[in-house]
Amino acid sequence: MQTAALAAAGSFCWNQACPDYSKINAGNLRKFGQTRKGVPRLQCKTCKKVFAKTKGTLFYRLRHSEQTVTECLALVAERNSLAAIHRVKGVKEETTSAWMHKAALHCQQVEPVVLADYQPVCVQMDALWTFVGRKGTKGGDPKPPNKAISGEEAPSSVIAACGSLRR
Image 1 (cartoon, one colour):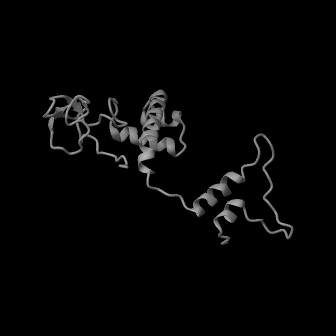
Image 2 (cartoon, one colour):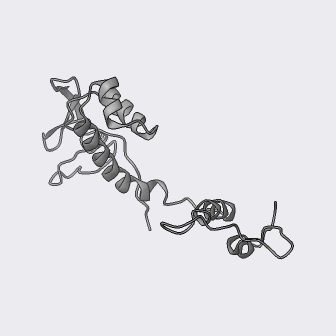
Image 3 (cartoon, rainbow, N blue to C red):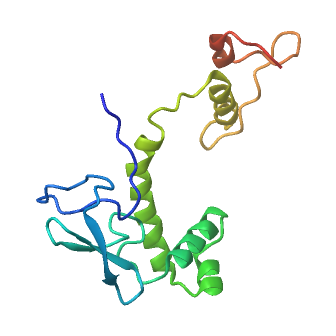
């Protein structure tokens, strides 16, 4: 079974009818000028179709530069409000919101490929349970931590399942 791989933007022809479609670095692409915004365009030597180098990426057909988009999304990740981003970067709240939705779709497509060979280990699952398990019930008081009779915290079932009781 062959696993999918991520290809660099502009490394293959996007025309599904082309014999060289999705052949990465097949030598069939040549530079073909640039868009008004300065994004390089490529032409397939086989099918003669022209496309922007950013096709298939988050930045395809956006009016702002890649740097501006990246900076705005980084500000969102740092928990800045959309209004604050508008004041600082001059980008409308609706535009930043649209970029967030577009980035989320790309993450859903890329995540399975990136994490295909990643195997989580028991310690990571225990750390996740420690975070999630302490959240309490919805709308109620936080759950008290599990206490053993001696007053010491009882080991969680996740730790016991791993067979490791390191502290």
